Amino acid sequence: MKELIAFFVMTALAYLGVEIVRNWLMKRQVIDLPNERSSHSVPTPRGGGLVIVMITLAVALVSMFLSQSWKESLVFVIVGCGVAWIGWQDDLKSLSPKVRFLLQGLAALATILGLGYFDTVTIPLLGVLHLGLMGIPITLLWIMGLINAYNFMDGIDGISGSVALTAAIGWMLFLGVNGQFSSPLFWIALAIAASNLGFLGHNWSPARIFMGDVGSTFLGYCFAVLPLLSVDKVQDAFLLGVIVMWAYILDTLITFIRRLFKRERVFSAHRTHIYQRLVISGFQVSSITSLYLLLTSLGVVLAYAWIQGYEFAPAAIIIGLPLLWIILIGFTKYRENKS
Image (cartoon, rainbow, N blue to C red):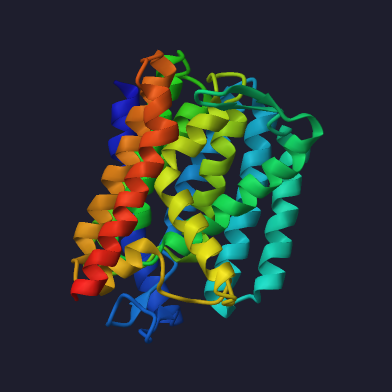
């Protein structure tokens, strides 16, 4: 009962907080102006993710003082603050990619020093792969990759808030079925879900405010670190983290590889992600956001099925999800040719 009350209180605080932050951003002229690559046509304040950061880190701090696992929570709070600060600076003055990646790399290294790294990974249908020291660069790549994937994917109204809400509820479920209702991780996931629900009240199409890099990079960090924090609490936590974020990961990875083969500047702004191409082909923004919400929900369901040991889960994860993405790519090309 207390969890439900806390959820609604944090949702209300987030909704009110975003309104206050929006007015402050308008006065400071932290505005995202439309351009040829934009999915919006009206000048819109960016930086609403500040509220998500503040609520999530506040809950993490309180949980830290009320639990024995204070070290893990402290690392999450300190490095999470650092990642959010990098994103905020990018919102204010557009950091160069080199500076941004360097700072994010330092944040990822600090996380590994404080929390450790993944030393095993479970691959459905194949078994457990022992990584050894290779787990260090893999964990580094995982953290930096998801920070940037979440940032790259935050390009249309409501998409990243919806995915965060769904993914965080998924982590609440995974932790809950493992008896972790009172753990700091459960409350961090609850705070992420509630704050994003409140934020979506302002960000659903047509958006009155954008999350900004401060919010998107912080959420990417959260969903990269939640599996790392859950290794001793949830079986196959790394795999679950990948499954939950599968749509964002595949969209970013395939787009990155395709641009690399075309010898394009892979870190320059573009509109070639699947979600962007679907919008350009004529779909409403809210429809595409709903699609990614459903895709993330599917990931949560399959991750839960894996935890529960359902026989269909391994094949559905390792074969079904990539096949579904191939179908989505084909449908996107069909729509582009038709339009």
